[in-house]
Length: 433
Image 1 (cartoon, rainbow, N blue to C red):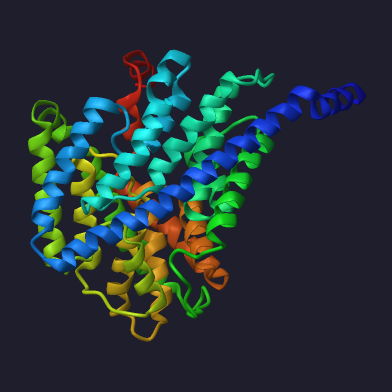
Image 2 (tube, rainbow, N blue to C red; image 1 turned 90 degrees about the horizontal axis):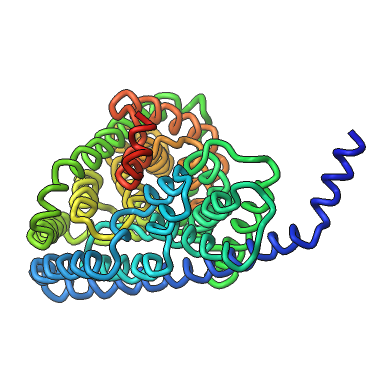
């Protein structure tokens, strides 16, 4: 026992280990800065497109198809591997055992392309989020630091990827706790105890950097709604079941839709992009221009109760996100899913007029997001930190677990795990089967 303590002590105070923590801290700062840039530029891009749509409701019918064609062309020509959310790519690299395979998906070229093309996608009105891309960018940045310091911990490359992806979530949402939970629950089911400190270093530094620049800002605002778990039993059950079911259906649409459209995207990528862009414009037109972009503004309106949206918003936002993802452009589904859930919760609130409206909106957000990602703890922690509504933690927690169970009965395998298989080498796919 004494020998073990002495060995552990030497590990804690050694020069190499302090160097490792310093490297993770530097990586966290860089991820925080990039995440902040993506947040500010994404808001700018969304504002520019909405200004164009308000000038003429028919401009999106030109901008969206042409914009998506341009994004797809740039992706295929200069940034292959940057398409989609980015989280499946990160999960795939955690499964890979060879550096040469990881180097294909985690390069600084892809990271730069992810940032630029995500912003361009928002300028085109696509219903995409920047959070998944931030996870990909964070993992690529942290992974690139392996060449500067030699680490003594086994499989440090995997720890770097895990820390970078988790830091990306923390910095993107200004939610350090959610970043930690996401890393444990979604990206990696298990990792060595002594590597947790390194991951926490990157996550906390990234979040502190983002918060230091942007302030401790609640993206979805806050609500005064308060309701106990006993009182909320019926709406929690309904939101968990219905929103979880919609989340499972959404996941199936992305999984099977990606497989179905893959041959068409390979043969006629620009035609597919143009048709998807046209579909985004049509959905946006009938939603009153509410389904464009990530959906932060719409979700905030619903959470705070400062405005009203049509009951069809949640369903149209779901469709717009599916079409945006199937186009093959870089972009995530985190924020659009939260906005969709808010819309579904607002619609369900009309069925339960005796319950607080804001609470139903939050239950819808948690339920749908949990149904999509099938990571219940991550779902309610993200919403909890982004709305600062600790009084509703138990109802949101129960909603998340119910929704996850319902979603799994519809979509057996989690969406990110399934999509990650597309990026694995053939021999790894055969081994998993």
